[in-house]
Length: 313
Ligand code: ADP
Ligand code: MG
Image (cartoon, rainbow, N blue to C red; front, side, top):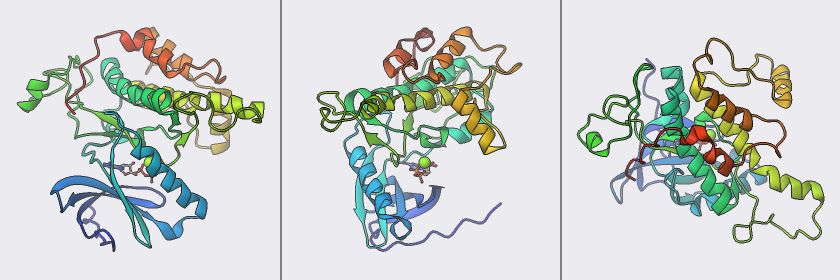
């Protein structure tokens, strides 16, 4: 067992007590922390400025600006932002349960009902971004989908029943037995996100009159990158491995470019035709043919079972 890593102190972050590291990225560390002014638990994303180029710095500020304007139960909240000469500090709503990625690794794969429960929350977040904010996330993946608290996952055989708020309060929220102890899933990491549509007029940003057709088309289809990624996440939830994989990056790139994937036997044998149909409409190479978020949400698979009511905020 690795020794508890040293928790650094950061100049400019005196109002927070860092407790433990929750994750890291190329230029950032994310810590669980206590906000000493409110005594509340939060997450703090510390970004090292000195390693960033000017455009990367601008991207952080864009990430902050986009997060400030997003208010949805399926999107991680930005509580505050500050900076010191050396760092940016993003104070975020704490997601105790960590990455969906780790849960997939633990459980191998999710039942169709549990996959639906998770993917519908993610999809509602994407719907909000695409339709209400004109924002494309561009980095939807299991590492950026976080559980609000540590989920109690069912065994593979168990039947998922609708979420039961009261049972959860009693602490007996075993999904498939008592309720949906899977809780809330939220979208994090707006580091690559972009505003592409004017949210009032729902037209491309910028003056359309002089914009080249490929740009107009690009902006029209830019949302479809999130839909592809949503298809990859759903595929992975259902079988435990991603739709596109190869040891060699060049082979993998080629597979993605051609949209070459299969519903590999025996893993996919018992998964419904409806789920496969939905995935086929997402992992579709032509962005014009790919489902939009509204088409996704209207698909029979998404409406197959009564969706459990969302857990309390
Ligand atoms: P990067 O741009 O470096 O990928 P992220 O914002 O994705 O930064 O954060 C990196 C990791 O830190 C995430 O994958 C997750 O494990 C953890 N993390 C991020 N935000 C939170 C949060 N609000 N609560 C808990 N863990 C978080
Ligand atoms: Mg990330």
